[in-house]
Length: 279
Image 1 (cartoon, rainbow, N blue to C red):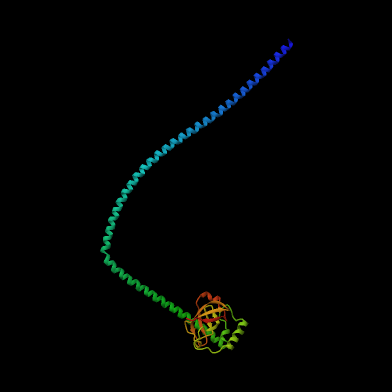
Image 2 (tube, helix red, strand yellow):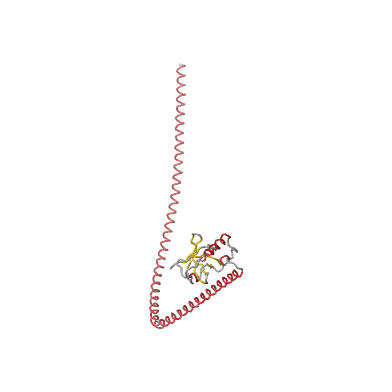
């Protein structure tokens, strides 16, 4: 009997434990479902809130659209009014244009005569200005050439008074004497120089003096060598071509020639070879 009682108590305890476990599991599942239901409710409330906001925005948009529609109608009315005004302005402009054309036709002969007189007057002014400019340019060139010649003659007289060859005088402001080697070379060429014919094709010479202030050089060939005003000589520093010079003043045994390009004055040196260009 005692064993049966113990067995009954054990079974009862096991059954109680199982009941408690089942009840606990059911309670846990119930709480989980409640939590899920609460989460779903919150999501639903959030969706409802968003829906209300969207509906409000939609209503606001409908109001904005209605306002824009009203403004559009007003704009269309204004455009129609402006078109009407534009048509009236065009009509007035066309009428004014016709009046102007009529006036142009009435004044055509007078304008033609006036234009002819203005053209003649303008041409006379241009011719006068051109002649004045040419005269001024000629005066300037004359004064410049006279200054160059005077300077050259003064330097030549000074050199002759000192008993020194012209080829050994340095006129350029950057230097006061030629190199000793150039002096010896000039002396040798002077000693070996022979009489040249009256006219020589491809005539050669050398640079004696450079005047950078007035942009010209003196070369050791002149009228007795057949050199004339306007002759063009090419300048060579060794085998390097420097540029051209054009004869402006001629003496018996030398000539003054201006630099064709102003920048040449920095490249030409005393003793450089010059060769007359043939036409």
